[in-house]
Length: 157
Image 1 (tube, rainbow, N blue to C red):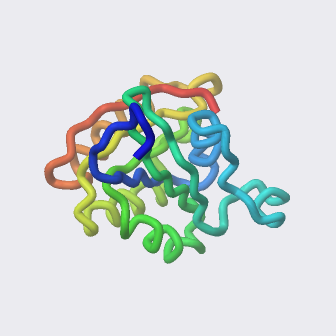
Image 2: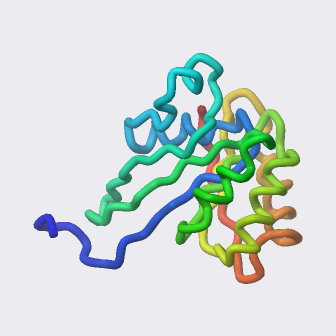
């Protein structure tokens, strides 16, 4: 164990959300690591495979981050990545709001029993973050994991 590091159990944070809602951009902003490592991912601007990055918290605790693809064609990859997570980071773009893969990813999290997480309202600089947060709160109350509580944070990505 590294001196000063929190000795708590390992935790894994997994992204969730619709394609192009800023999941990877938010992970880059938080960790400095681009989890899209394949040339095809970078040229197309979409995640295809699972991406990984460490996230060091101010407490000294380190989270393992799993960045999942948001495109409907890659839902199996999303499920594979989400199957081992402890908490979620659900990204909802302020310019789009809740979309089909937002709902699908939340349903996967519910089925896997992942109830702890946060909603990030991304692209807050080009959309209506307040409206997206209201829509997100309703989605989490209605379709989220049974013991989930709602918390959102606007972000620009």
